[in-house]
Image: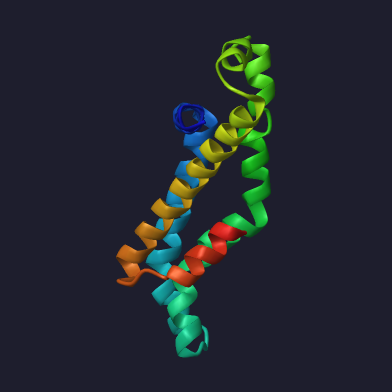
Length: 140
């Protein structure tokens, strides 16, 4: 199960579509964190809202475009194995449940890495890591 998950995660990291999505996450995190102090100065916000302003770009990506990104990258995970005829090698070695859980955890690990790196870039600008907001984005 862990080998299948690791292979799935590295396979997603190597793909061109996933590199584009990771690049979009990184660019959005960078620019939203870079320009959020300017936005805070122009908009009347309280202290808590101003502190959370650094993560607005990641919020937009996860809420508005998150489902599109997930469906575009990982909707055909099982079908791709069947089309390339590599599923028959997996079925003889492990159970179906382990294959499905391995694929699930591999895809989950990829998205955790994307969101974690985005929040790391944001934390460089805000000089604090927003754990609560990170877990809210991760759960969503």
